[in-house]
Image (cartoon, rainbow, N blue to C red; front, side, top):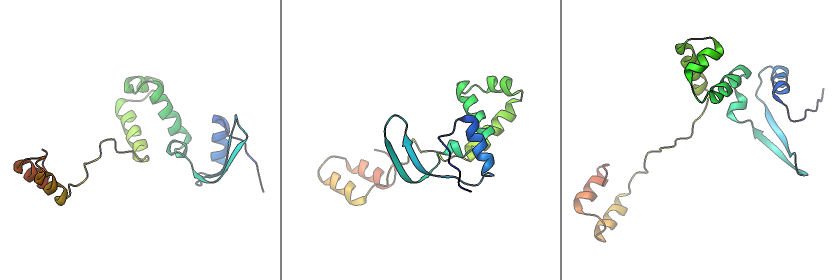
Length: 134
């Protein structure tokens, strides 16, 4: 059976997820609504779209409350530990971008070249080579 779906709205999205019985979805065609441009390929859904519908609602409510757990307690009628546990469970299902990555390892030759050019002192070179900061 071949069905065609337009870009789903919230209710349609939930219906689509029920139709697929939580099987993974791959989007194969994207059309820009305000232009006559269509892109075809295999596109993975964004992480938030892969969450269960009730978790998507929970995340949206959390954002709407500006991250207020107290407000989330009131909206959902649950305790602080319940809100925290659910947030932790949802966060565990998401991949996060490291906004503070560890610095790249220092190349020994680079440190020695900087030392030879007089850009750093011998003490600084030793610290860098040992993994310390300047």
